[in-house]
Image (cartoon, rainbow, N blue to C red; front, top):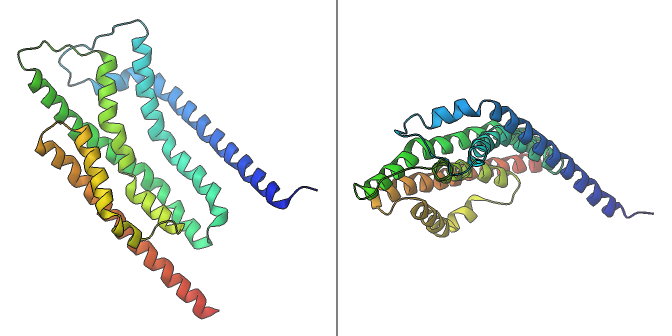
Length: 245
């Protein structure tokens, strides 16, 4: 006779496998759909480039198109991955927390897009302009497609994930893993880490650092405020349940 705990673990692993497969299938389908329109997406992304991007090898164009399609697929798949995660953890959550957690899904998508837009419309052109000024007249600039889009992705995609901070904090607070006291206690360490991230990915000038550091610090403070709101609401619900009992 099998151990019930062992059966439960196997069941959880099977469910996790199933949801990971669904997410992977959604990513592949989204990537295939994005690849169909990748030339149009490419033309829009290079609309402000004064020169044609250079290919150094016959396979570079496939690499560039696959990279663009992959980023688009991540943005499309993110709400699906969030929904699959929600379905996986809901059995361990109270009924009211389940309904509240479902609201996170559109929020996660919106925050990711906002982060991408911040990186693409603000940070990326600022850093590119700085690099062009550094080159000056001493160098002849010739961008390869692979280098250009690798640089662009490094300046945009990380901010899509960094801007998820408020939604993740809210979700973890709902699960009881985080609370506002822990977040406030870790503020100095969090600021230090966020400052290092900002300084690492920006040009070596104070203005660029501030433009990136301020939104990241603001996101952390917003996360603490959201955690306080969720935590107080949970305490109020527990007090009501205790009073009714």
